[in-house]
Image (cartoon, rainbow, N blue to C red):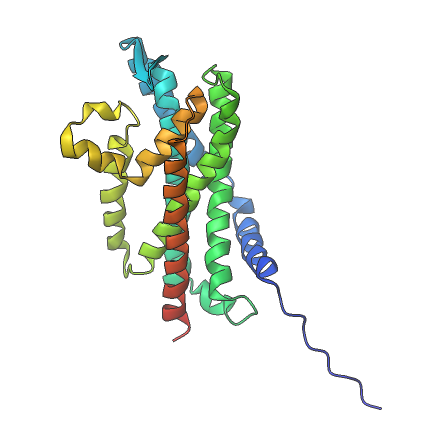
Length: 265
């Protein structure tokens, strides 16, 4: 009597996604020092500009309330921390795996699909960016910059920022052909970091320039974090949430379509 042939049990999308996340965790387990730089950079900015310059500036008005300059800058650094952490993995590391390591060609020989790859890399980016944001919130709490229970939602807000930028950055990276293309990332990253109301209020801009700034994604993230950490939450906060959700969902959709085009045709 012949033995019935056994077929492997197909992976669910959750299992396939988590396998890719697990692969990244194992890979970076011995390179934990790389994570320190991503955390220290916004802390140094906070200490040098927020506290240093804060000695020269008494308070800023935000949503009708006067707050110390350091407490004004800190939420901006929190959003920037999530922003930078997302770009690090979703641009440079993703490009290396896609173009040089050819990792995804091997992965697609398994039951893992392109959608699982997209979701897995975005989730991994969130774990990295989220760890930076959580540590930064602890620093803010230790320095006495958190005065509202709404601040508990600042970590999910930072994860939302990371999700939006991770997905869009991965989508853009699929069109990159060489390392020189990453100069375009710097060209976008630096102005966003400097002019998204991270260091001064958006009211410093007049007319159409203020409208442009208010439409940028990092500005929406900075405002959302600032509203949560200062307790100035209103129905207008939902604008930033919906903006970042739509941005992330659109980016994730494009990543999957681009991976289908690059790896399956």
